[in-house]
Image (tube, rainbow, N blue to C red; front, side, top):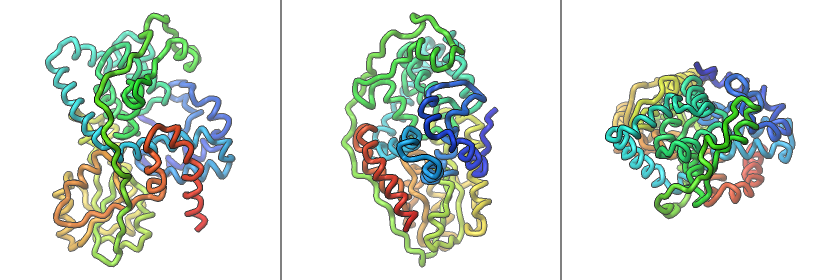
Length: 401
């Protein structure tokens, strides 16, 4: 079972424990996967950052309170990878919709091709006979978490050794990861397969696995694919402009939506908004044609309820069980609201729900981090990385102001 508690207190406790290690310790030991219970050299904050139970700005601020920017460079970059992926997908949302279509086709093939179905089931249940892969499959299902290096090895073995469609692997991760989100998950799998950076793939090597699992897994060199030819796919769609933050008129009667992509709503409520009521929205089941892992749904629903409890004095009456945009819009109109206000939702299930709302304006202000960082996600991460000092400077300047 997962040892991640869906509370802000647990996220902050993990952050406090990790901050002393965020410098040289993280830089030198972050690639070592010691297995369940042994992840002390990585932060394990990803489920909290994914839902902004704890925010990227809070994490960076805490780390820079203990380390220099150069000293914590590797960890700060890792935190902002998720921001980069979101910004990249915001400007190319067709990549997500194409993945969804290709996934449905792959699942149709699973139903009609017995060999594919057998191999897919073996991979998902950890019965391939490849010891580390089978271990990671079970660890993911049991805990909702995998070390980042294990995710890369797993995806590479899925695509190049087992020769399974990458979309099926991305879906397996998205159904089971507590921190799974459309941008990081989809684009990470595309990168391994050679679709994201055209022609650049990631090959899992037995020697590398043995080294960075400290000998937990020792495989013959011939047990995994010796090369990783890029998966073929269509060209990237044209890049759109980065989204803009909506302005909110606090004098208008307002309904508020608290959703699973941003569970720290104080920055919006502090804009002098007094909601007539708040709807809690957790539509993760829309992320897959299959069934989301129960512990993922439970984590997100409990985290959303916990956030509502923390902010209950400022939310007004709370509504639950509104499963689509039309129902939320009708609820807001029944309250007498003239606008719905909610945190900008990146490409994914929440964004889909918000797009269904009609008959009432839906305003999505953006956090400063997203406003500053997303427009720089135009190409690869290394170009984005050059802007990180500017991004951090903008966050620090805002706090100083």
